Image (cartoon, rainbow, N blue to C red; front, side, top):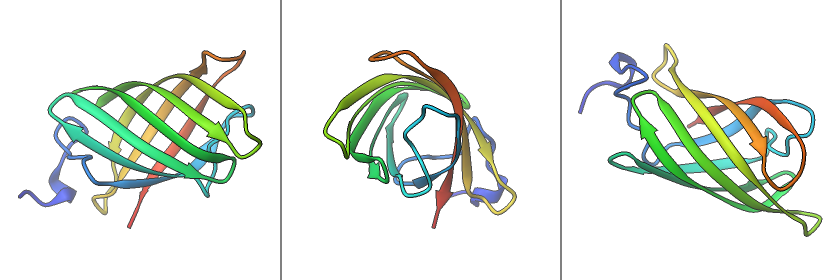
Length: 121
């Protein structure tokens, strides 16, 4: 297996990696206590997530090169459900960890924004 530090956004593996929120636009519900566990088989990606304002969430979509496109749905800690779509651009950090730069839009209510999630080890 190649050293993570030599990987590019198009080739780095995301399967099994855990991420947490770093920044988010107003109206977003992902924060620093929200943890995602990603999985990948070929061009299919999915994750489960929770923490902070999110009790339990799931995402599913596709990966093409260094871009992830997916839909997400989650249950908030207040009991309401929400969902939307997101495109994430992969960045490989100097230490081999992965950062995702996300552009998201709610489909269950008004609102769009950007966020960053970063791999935790």
